[in-house]
Image (cartoon, rainbow, N blue to C red; front, side, top):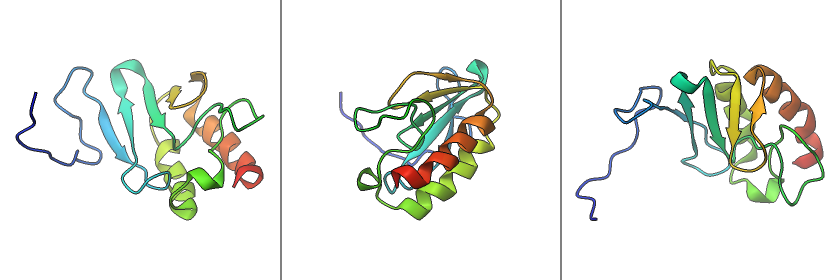
Length: 118
């Protein structure tokens, strides 16, 4: 299969694909990092912006990856506000188990642990 065109996903606008995920731009881990809100599933897919475990971490639960994995730490910390505002109660991270509970609680735990990681 060959792509004839590549387009940037519109930040905050549902994509016309099954589940209608909403891209949320969350730079920091990488320049173009994007989380996806899936309203139908009451979930946010956080990729590596917010994880719940990693082979390099002894912490269990919501956290950020160690600083050497981050392209821009201040942008990453700012992007946590985007995740925090997402109307979801399930976090599906790029690493670690699924988190069930208020997204704001997951972000609060992540922020409290960030100084240990970054």
